[in-house]
Length: 241
Image (tube, rainbow, N blue to C red; front, top):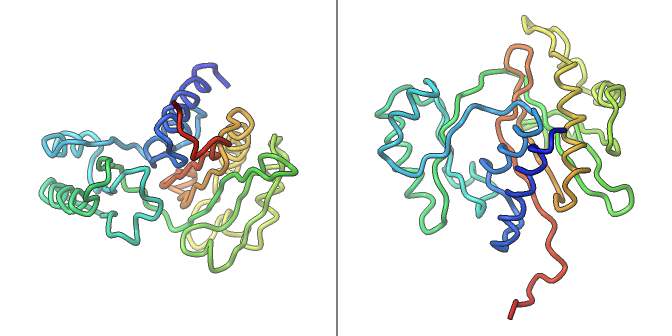
């Protein structure tokens, strides 16, 4: 990995820890992922209503808009996600509604391209006390909690490990050509899993990475939502003089 990559990640993580936070916002999480060449949605964090129209035309319709704050882990439950916005009026309306929903919490509005795809995967990382960082892969979207069809491997991953993980899940056929859908680019998917493992190895403060959903757009896996959780520093609760 480029040194620049690590530097960006370290800077974002240190900034969050210095603010006493142990979760990164979706935007911060995706900035780190991008630094590791993991494909994420094209997006922009907007902090002023005046920037909505320009940002919308830069990204292009249809758009997804979300409340973006490190204080919120589950946006869907709080009406902070607006999808399939087709024009500037709809985007401005969504902006106002999201800002209202955020209330006192600090943050902005994340405007992103809408990724279309019928297949959703989940991937991530957990730091096991015994084995260290372990990469997770499985079926995503609403199926994550229902089917729990996931598999784990200890990092670092070789490409062969990543390919083996794809065959491990019961729903592995979803990655092939089926019902008029092209087979997933398993090479790109394997690279993504390897890089998630590397991210955990490079940054000891990362406790957990949750990428759900990773939508297959055509043949390419794209991270649509991301959450990075940081380890609580041991001296949490103690005040600096």
